[in-house]
Image (cartoon, rainbow, N blue to C red; front, side, top):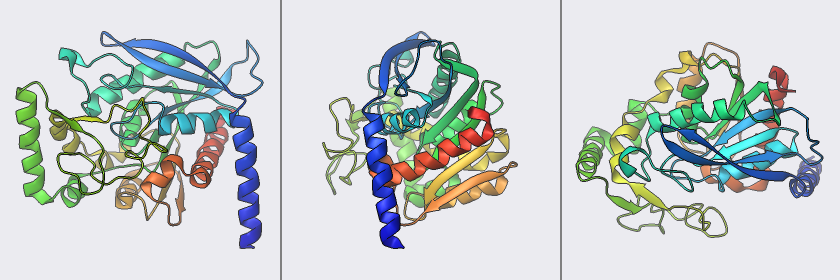
Length: 319
């Protein structure tokens, strides 16, 4: 049985890879709060001018640019027949700055606002059926996506992959308890007063002066350490990030929800907390032994996650 399952997965991956080579992309841009944001539209193989497709707006993990895991999942959505859209948030990648020329700041409020602007822009694209737009948030942007789509009449449904949904208890557990969190907030305020302090986002395991001294996805050129990646972190990010608690506000989400996660990935307790307070019926798929980084680019795990959220979008009227 395991052999048959592995064979089926391999066959599916080969078919997906072949179709991915046939999708088309188009660079686009849109405006928000005085800045120009760079985006990319992904269209399925065989798209015909005049067709209006269901769409998926894809956003990625903290510090990332659109060519990383957002591009991976946008490609997967296009293979499955959707128009998919990715973009760089203000202050990251090819997009313009945040106010006061700030860059590399992980700002939940600003990123949420950028997603709202992206939704409005995607609804105007000639390739998109504005009545069938969906949101897909990965890792940190899961909370931003939930905030952006809640109460938004342009969005049909939402999917979250490996969502980082934190609250105060989780923040304290991850960042060194109340004392550690307080220290990082002081770092943030000092950096804010000085106009920002930029450090590398990723580094090898054990490196000092680096946000993520763990190697892996963000550090390996064959994975996420691509030329387009800024690999920067503004220390002024800490206060906004640490006081952002999306796991505490699930009742605000008024859209059908699908979540794909794993007990081996980051803070699964945040998913449990969020779903406990979510008022709708959620589709939850927990994969076994899948790490956070596996969800970003491991073909088998990306395929399974993409299958789940695509089926969720179809079930809720996206096609």
